[in-house]
Image 1 (cartoon, one colour):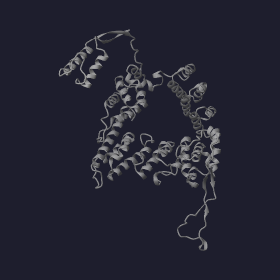
Image 2 (image 1 turned 90 degrees about the vertical axis):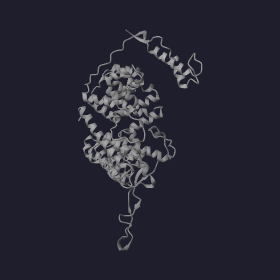
Image 3 (image 1 turned 30 degrees about the vertical axis):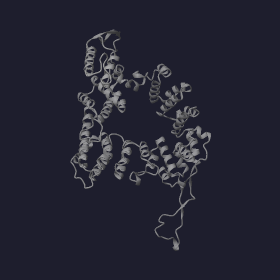
Image 4 (image 1 turned 180 degrees about the vertical axis):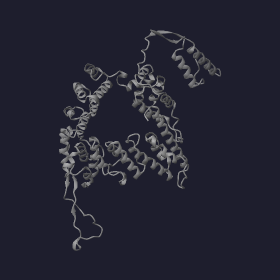
Length: 562
């Protein structure tokens, strides 16, 4: 047992707060207790504050005995190399300056390097020096985006500290069970007990951990209490089945289609539609096939019409039949469609029939269309004309289906060639859709497509696409970004328009590219139509980029991850 201490004869909190309030209001509006208004009131306030301060600091008196805190747990991970520990202290000591519209200068932004440092340190499995934990928790407190990596690196001792300081309680909230370890996944009794008695966050964490290890066991555990769970909890638990989703989950999800919660039914239908072999996917395919077909009756002039050429004996050339896709949208949303996840009520501004059609096509297996449309490949199907203005709706639904079903062949067809006019395929009507389609491709192919997009269209629309590329950027993508920045600089473009891409390059460009940038550090000659001072800004921006890349290389080397 130990004794803590408290100030001797310390004035009550109310008395001190009263003096603070008087100072804030001014003695012309309020005077200290026992003091009359007048010129002596300010001196009396200062005297009272000085006396109260001394009394608060003068001494300590025994307080009630309390249990000595348990010792901090051990962290078995290897310690940071000394150079990496010094680098971490430097990164944590840096604080962002006041926001404003001024230049950033040529110095690297250390606050943006901390997330990358943490990612490498976590990948290497290092433990932090104990003395940096308070600064690390303070940094994570101020930046929610930093918390997952910071808490993983901080380890169990951060949770021990968080129980002693209310400012760091976020660490307990961010950790399932407030830092309590999940039971071993082989311990069936403890798993069952935590599932039945644990807090919601603990149960979600348990289900997710078990799902990643043994999908069937996680699903069976969820089934034991499914009928008694609250609707909002059922929705969250059902969402965890995305991890390891497979055909064995179909019976459970089919039962969830009859759930009393509309959101649960919709999520179950979405998961089933991501299983091309499911009964729901087959039902959706039948409905979608009834709406979409090849129409051979439409005709179009043959190739070469309009050039002035004539057919045999001077006759006009004959039309030839050209296949097109004909669409007949549903005329009603029947109960079976609703049970399978089709939302009957269309959003404001959308026609009901097009709304229903989009949901059917989105949920149908993409393999349906090759069989339905004459054995054509995805690229050939996307190239077909669509009659009566239905192309946008049909292709947008195929985009959503390709993302949901992770179908790379359909994603390639819908993306089209990156150098195509207006920078997109026929179905990719927005940058957001293109970014989602790119997410279904491998990292190398994704980088190659975005590099081609930048080479053809520049950087003005590429920011969102760059965000889905793996880090560090592949060499072709890095070169495309640097070349586009150089072109913008030489053209005298407004440099501030590219600050977002430049910041992204500082975080994502491969540090090996630094040597290629040395030729861009000088202040360029400014064209007549250039923004005033643009050359100096570009030189500073490239200097900052080079310095940051070399700093990132040094950080990786210090962590043994060169």
